[in-house]
Length: 240
Image 1: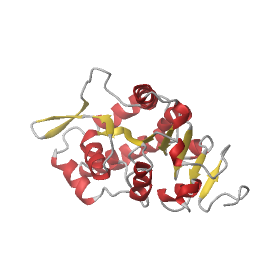
Image 2 (image 1 turned 180 degrees about the vertical axis):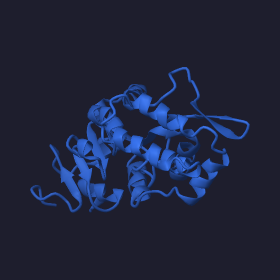
Image 3 (image 1 turned 180 degrees about the horizontal axis):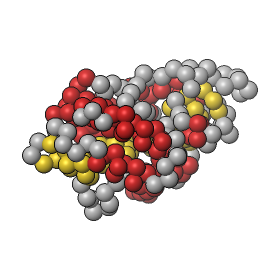
């Protein structure tokens, strides 16, 4: 592999292949628009006719134009109040798909012995299903409030707080590194939006999947064309 020409579909910043997956012990993934093809909150909103309002806030948050991610998420979730609980299953069955190349890349990481995390500002209804589908070791996400078969427009409180935002994504990554007894340099973080930047900055290798401009400007690796398996071209043992 050439050391001067980046592999097809990749933009590199401060990293030069070939790398070795075996040099890493942990990989953390964002979910919406990274592992999967949709922003789940936008699709739920479509069920109650609020897609445009919610999507506008989502896009502004992902571009980093709304500084307070927690507030932006609360605003969007509030717009879902009254949506039937069945809307979640409808979105999962009819809209949610793994992004191209995700299974190949995740399985390559697992085969190399990496532990796998899903850390999402999205919702546990979807994150747990994606975790099981991919055989991931752990998932952390937000939980939607539900009462009498309908969304309440709120998020459930947890002992650690009520919202997974950028700071919480970083905290979880650091905590798992500590529990594993590894350096953060041995962790990879994969995301696409502004709230992924804190965990991406903390990791030894950051990979952005079809990222927003603010993320591409900071990520060590940006996948700008093709599926997530394009990242395998970085790693010598992948043979890509």
